[in-house]
Length: 66
Image (tube, rainbow, N blue to C red; front, side):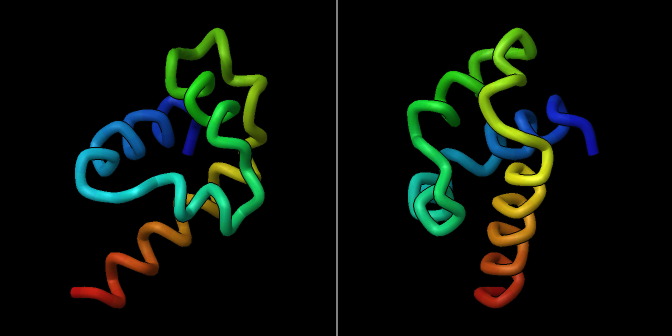
């Protein structure tokens, strides 16, 4: 996935989850995440690896709930 795909995913799930919980687990600053979510010009704020880890954690958590 590209960073823009992760941005879209997090925008879709944000109303239903406390994203900050997952960010803390991965050691990502909520400020950096907030800036990243503003647009592609802020892609430098979070590495692709960290986005992949947060994404995987969110998906796994949702699968465990279902």
